[in-house]
Image (cartoon, rainbow over all chains, first blue to last red; front, side, top):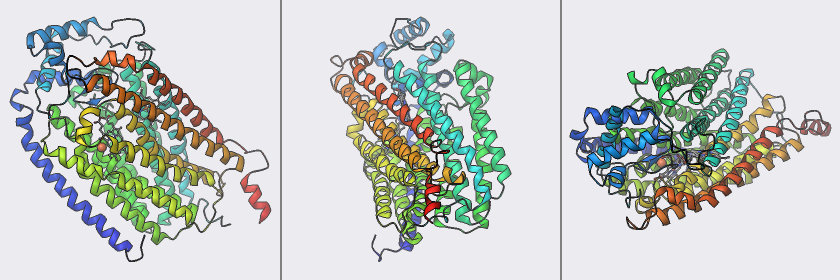
Length: 148
Length: 476
Ligand code: HEM
Ligand code: HEM
Ligand SMILES: [Fe+2]
C-alpha cells in the first residue's frame, strides 16, 4: 500500500466508518421493528400461535426443516405448508397435520424418517395455528412456488 | 536464519495448550457427526431412531462453534502476553475456566444424545426462559448462561493483561473482536413470540459474528502469525489490519440485510442487503493480498513452513468460501431462488472452514510446537505431513462445496424454477440428487483422513534424530 496512505488514515476510516454504519443500522432497525406488526399481522399472533412456536422450538423442528428458508435442508420448507397441504383451508390443514404427526415415523425402509414426538391434540393444534400465521407473513412472495 | 526470538517468551502462554488440544478433539467429533449426516442424506433411516438427523446436526454445528471458541481463546492466551509484553493477569483463572467450559460443553453434547430434545428442554427448565430450539442456538438456557460467565472471566483476564501491558494494534483489534463476540451472543437470550422479530435479531448473533466481529479476530490472529513468520515491519502490518477491519464492518453491518429479504422485514432490505453485502468479499480479498504480499516481502525464512502454509491457505479458502460463494447467492433476485437450498450449505461449509477453522489451525500450527519447546517448528518430516494434510483438507472441502453446489443448482432447476404444479416436490427432488450426495460423502471421508494426518503430524519425528531443532543446532 502506498506511503501517502498512512496508518492513521486507515484507523480513522475504521473508527468513523464503523460508527457511522452502526448508527445507520440502528436507525433502520428502529424503522423495521416499527413496520413489523403490520407486515406480520401482529394482531393475529394469539396465545395459541405463541404456544405453537414453543412446541416448534421444544422439538427442534428447525433441525430438519427450513422455515421461511432458514434452518436445515433435510426436509421440506414449512413456511408455506399451509398452502401446499391445506390449500388455504384451515380445518383441512389442521386435520392433515394431526394425522401426519401421529403417523410418524413412516418406517419406510431407506426413507428419511421424522421422529414420533408424542404431541397432544392441543399441541398439534397450536403448531397448526403457528404455521398458518407464519404462512401469512408478507415476505416479498417467497418461496417462488408451492413446493417451497 | 533468524530463530530463537520466536519461542514462548512468557510462562503463562502455556495455558493455551489445553485449549488447543481440546479444540482438535472436538473437531474430530464434529467430523464424525458430519459423516453420519452425510449418510443419512442418502440412507434416510441410517441410525434412526438412535440419532435422528436433527440431533446429529446440532451436535455437528455446536461442536464446530465450540471448538472454534476454544481455538480463539487458546490463540488469545498465547498471543496477548507476547504482544502486551507481560504475563497473563491470572493463569489460574484461565485453567479453571478451561475445565468449566470443557465440562459444561461435554455435558450439553451428552444431553443432546442421551434424551429426546423436548425432554432436555423440560429438564433444563426451558419453559421458564425459552431460548432453545433455534438453529445454532440449541443449547439449554443454563448452558448459554454458563457461556456468558466463562466469557466474562476470560475477557476480564485478557482485558487486564492488555490494559496493564503494551497496547499493540493487534491486541486492541483482537479485544474488540472478542468483546463484540460476547456482546452479540447476548441476543441469543432474546426469543420473542413474533417469528419475524426472532429471526431479525437471531442474525445479530450469527451474521454479525461471522461477517463482523469474527473477522476482527481472524485479522488479528493472521497479522500475529505473519509478523512472527515473516518479520515484516509492524507499521506495515498494522496499516493493513486497519484497512481490512474497516472494510469488514463498513460492508458487513448493513450487509446483514441479505438475510432480511424473505422473513417479513420491509422491502427496502432487498436493496440495502444486496448492495452492501455485494462488497463483503472485499475484506476477504484484502486478507488474501495481505498474506501473500507479507510473505513475499519477508525478512526472515522462518523454519515453521507449515504455519506459513496455513496462513496463506486460510486467506485463499476464506476468500473462495465467503467471498466467491457468498457473492454467488447474495443478490436478492438470485437469493430468491437459492435461499435455503443445498447452495446455502455449500457456502456455509467452505466459508466456515476457510476462514475460521483454518485460522485456528494456523495459530495451532505456529503456537503448539513453540509451547512444546520447538520454536522453529516441528521436524521437517512432521511439517511435510502437516502441509500435505492442509492440502488434503482444503481440496476435499472444496470438493464437498462443488458437489453441494451442483446438488443445489439441480434442486433449484427441478423444484424452484418451474411453476406450481410442474415443479417436483422437495422429497422427489432429493432422490434425484443421490449421486451428488454420494460424492459429497466420499469427499467427506477424504476430509476426515486429512484431519487424522494433521493431528498425527504433531507426533511425527519426536524420537527420530532429524528434527529441525537438531538440524538448526548442528548448523549454528
Ligand atoms: C466430513 C465432512 C463433513 C460432512 C459430511 C458434513 C455434512 C453436513 C451436513 C449433512 C449438514 C446439514 C445440512 C442440512 O441442514 O441439511 C452440515 C451442516 C453444517 N456443517 Fe458440515 N459436514 C462436514 C464438515 C464440516 C466442516 C469441516 C465444517 C466447518 C468447518 C462444517 C460446517 C457446517 C455448518 C456451518 C453447517 C450448517 C450449514 C447451514 O446451516 O447452511 N461441516 N454438515
Ligand atoms: C467467513 C465468513 C462467512 C461464513 C462463516 C458464512 C457462513 C454462512 C452460513 C453458515 C450460512 C447459513 C446460515 C443458515 O443456516 O441459515 C450463510 C448464509 C448466507 N451467507 Fe454467508 N458466511 C460468510 C460470509 C458471507 C459473505 C462474505 C457473503 C456475501 C458476499 C455471504 C452471503 C450469505 C448469504 C446470502 C446467505 C443466505 C443464504 C440463504 O439465503 O439461504 N456470506 N453464511
Ligand atoms: Fe450473512
